[in-house]
Amino acid sequence: MAFIRTGASTLMIMFTTSGHSRTTKRRNGGARSTPDVSGLIWIDFWRTTNMGGPLEHMPLALCDPTSVEAEDVVPVGMTGIAPDNRQSRHLSLRFNARQRWYYYPGMTTDELLAFKLAEFWKTPTPFRNCFHSAFPHADTPEGAEKRQSCEHRVAVLVLAD
Image (cartoon, rainbow, N blue to C red; front, top):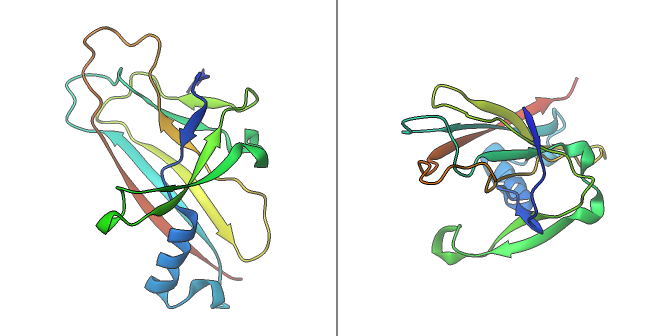
């Protein structure tokens, strides 16, 4: 991994917190109120697709969750993502020079990033979501192939002991 810092004032996280808990309740009959479930962990699998060479245009950056302060997190509503133009709730991240951002340089289509996107527990725990965003790298060559990527998110229910 390589260290980077972007000059952007806001980076967007690519998941919803309240939407996921609603989805969890619908899909498993109410995980939050189920005594045998103690938490939920989301794992994100991200890779480039259909590219002729290594990724140079708009690589994916991950923020070290331990470097995010509570004041950095900004709730936002977005339209155009959810069906029927419904507003979906997301979290954005305000720039803070103490945040630590990393990326994987020159990623190829046969490589995969797997990272813990978020975790939710019945008992209070520190906020440790992994904010991530594409960013314009200063060393991107002129005419670099445009990024094509995909991600898959997996929810893991953690059973109580």
